[in-house]
Structure formats: C-alpha cells, structure tokens
Length: 382
Ligand code: MG
Image (cartoon, rainbow, N blue to C red; front, side):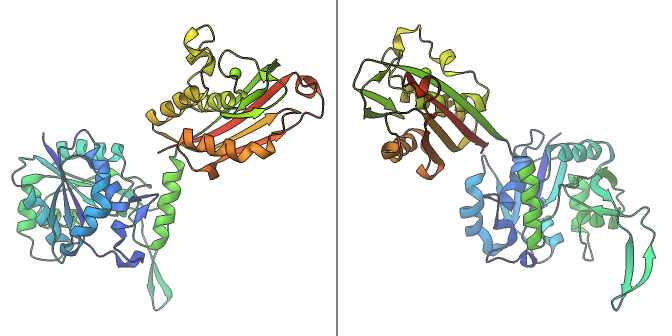
C-alpha cells in the first residue's frame, strides 16, 4: 500500500502575529512547517510528501524550510480556500500511484509517529479515518456576552489532522465539492463517505495564536534530552619545572607525574563528557598500559570525547572545571585555559569555566603533594 501525505501550508497565518506567516516562523530553532513535514518524511510508512504553498511563499519555503528537509519533497501552489489547496495537493500526487493519502495541517508541527500509525491503520480498514479528542470542558452557547445555554458535550469532538483517506475516494469527493468545507472530513462526508474516529493527541496542537508557540515550545522542551556528567582526577607532583593544565604550560617548581602529559584538569573535563554519555572513562579508552599514549597531549583524549558526543547527536552546552591546589596560582592563566578548551571543543568561550580553589592547606593538595581537578559537563541532544 503506497501512502502519501499532503501537507497544507498555503494559509497566511495572520492570527499568530509576526512578520512572516506562522508556518515559516521558528519553533525551538526549526520552522513550524519543517517540523510538520519532517514528521512524515521520517515516517517509514509514508513514501511521498507534497507540500501545498501559497504562490507568494516559494522563496520563504526555499530559505527557511528546505534546508531542514532530506530527500525529495514535492511542492505545488494552493488556492484561496483550504479545500482548493488540498485539491491542488491531490492533483500533484496523480502520478504517485498512491492508495492512501494523509492530509495534514502544516501548522501542526508536533504530530507523532504513533498518531500517524493509528490513522494509517484505521484508514487501511475503513477507507477514511481522522483523529479527534473528546471535549472535557463544559461548552456554552453565548449571546451578547451572556451564557444563553449549555451544550451536551457527549458525542462532541475536537478534530485534528492528519486525516486519512482512500486516495481515489477523497480525490473524487474534492472534485465534486460544491460548497466550502473546513476540513477534509467534511468534504468526505458531503460525498457520502463515512469517517472513523481515531484517538487524537493533546500534543498535536495547531499553531494559531502567538501563545501556541510557547505551548509548543514547552511540549518540545519536555522531550528534550539533556545530560550532565562529572569527572574527577588527581596527579601527584614529581621533579620538574612546569605543569600542564587545560593544555597550557605553567611554570612551577614541580611537574605532574603521569603516563600522558598529566593534564589533570583536561582529564577531569574529558571524564565529565564520557560520564554524560555513559561511555566509560578515560582509562578505558586510553589505557595507561598502552605505550601509544606515553607523553601524549591530553587534547587527544578530549577531542575523542567531543567527537563521541557529536557522533551521538549531542551538543556540548557548557563545561565547568575546578582545579584544586595551593600552587601554582591558576587565576592569571584561567582565561588562556578557557580559550584553549574552546578551541579544542569547538564551542564559545562563554560556555567554558575554569576556576580554582585551595584546600586550605588540608589533605594532599594542601600539603602540595599534587593537584586535583573536578569538572561538570552539560550535553543537549541537537
Ligand atoms: Mg589523569
């Protein structure tokens, strides 16, 4: 069964405010319409997607939406009314040999794969199915600002999209339409087609007013994958004349002892990243027993953890490192260290903190036997 999707985005979207139609405005960095389209292009059951645009929006689509899409997307111009636009989309599919078509509002960016599945499944059985939610609020009728009656809400539903139909039947229904219709269920019913109700989804909201952007952002935020990790490391002093911290050599009356360059601060940061990813620790990835890492610059380890985060789809949001020692003094070098870390990690220096503390002459750091460092990292799935 070949399944296509028609995404209707030819409206002007004025009620949401803004300089450009709402479907082209960003929602957590990705335009509303791009999110709506992605839901279908990423669904394994949907093989063809056609987007119906306002004739004036071709350039907006190409600059704002197209860069977020992968693969072939058909586009066509819509008409003045929604039903005309849908018909244009259906005609654009005439060569696609599709059996089922899902018709979706471009302003419903949070449609889930589960909901699309439910619509496809029921449409394949009944020939027409659409999602809706039962109404929980009391519904009034009002006249001139006063309540004039209460409606019986049993049997009332709030309609959503995608609405699924047998392609041939809904095409015929649209071609034969003689009046206006607010959605495709109304078009289908006018042609005598029964439409089954699929359980809708509260998150599948339609961006209509400016406040809907905030509601959608909260829903997307709730799905955000944010991870934090922490790292800790200690290296002892040995005979020498400098230490290396965050890749910066600092003159001192001793050096740090270690298999690599003993950069205790960079090791703690690297372990914070591995920790956030739940991918082990520096000793597992770079065993001290391996002669390859003898004298190695610790940026090799940090770069590995950064690459791992990137490969798993995480963006490093911030790093925070505390170096614990009596000497050398860290403060004068902290900004140079931050800049070096920013260069290696590839994020803005404003997202990297390097600070220091003594341990009030207590313990091994207080006695000047070595340096300890601890670090925290925040990763956000991008
Ligand atoms: Mg170490």
